[in-house]
Amino acid sequence: MDLSGKKIILSVTGSIAAYKAVILLRLFVREGADVQVLMTETAKEFITPVTFSALSGKPVLSDFFVDTSGSWNSHVDLGVNADLMVIAPATATTMGKMANGIADNLLVTTYLSARCPVIIAPAMDMDMYQHPSTQNNIEKLKSFGNTILDPVAGELASGLSGKGRMEEPEKIISFLKAFETPEKKNS
Image 1 (cartoon, helix red, strand yellow):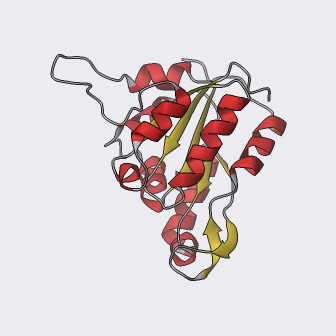
Image 2: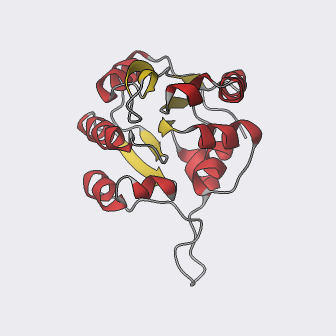
Image 3: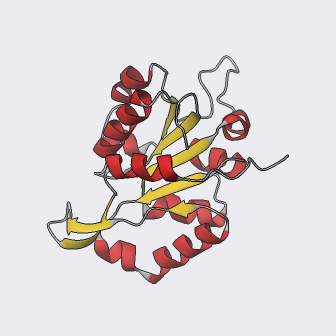
């Protein structure tokens, strides 16, 4: 896939791997993509929206409502107009919500409205990743047509070593460049 001019939603969840999403954003911008960053509230504990905003040239979205004036961030518009949605890093919590339709934040409601391909790059401790509930949610997400970029083995934030590290941003970009984009889903 040629990323130039593509409307990409980069969704960042609350993982220590959120720093890799900054690198991924830089690579998307370098490729000429038009990137809108969505962050969960927990993601903001790991890295600030200002960093993503400075690199994307757009405000970061995380709330449904902009202010008390009635302005809002339309998850439907975001999901319908995107060419690609990338969730990196994806936590067990967010994948569980996505797999079960728990639409309690802007990221998940946008995912549920998305008509474009969705690429998910999990990041978590190895025991969380291997847990049957997480594996069940991953299989469920695959059955919905999402693409999962398996985490890699290595040293984890917990100090343990095992499979759970988010795939490196450069490898995600390489994967996407080789990715055959299916047609957008119709209304």
